[in-house]
Image (cartoon, helix red, strand yellow):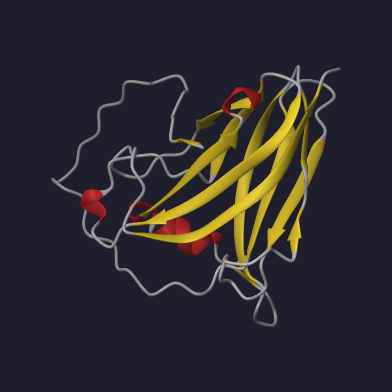
Length: 184
């Protein structure tokens, strides 16, 4: 499987005044991530919104998930996608997306497609060092077919080792969604 870590979006030249290197974010041990939610909004009319969920109630990711919704796309459209992660093993369920955002220098989502010809992924959000984070991305359907879409949240203990290309020290969650792209 090919894991994508692209950031294909228009680049803006910006001058930033700063006092040197970003400070090391304070890292706290993560809670279990048991659920990944993708909200897909079509970029072309009609701007349909679809929410798909992957859930593994024990958080191990090593067994068949309790739920893995199928991502269904129109082959002629691209989609803006927002990612949210949750710990649903506690009551009430806890949204961990803000925790990821607050320590984004230590995190990056990597996305993969099998087969890779189904769609392309362009990560939209960057951390303070201009490295991809992946909590939002564009997903452009390419050819009709079925396959698998993988979202892998990687973690670095030392944020300076995050290069935006290779997964980090540990995997916080690996969610695999069935994907179907339909010719319209």
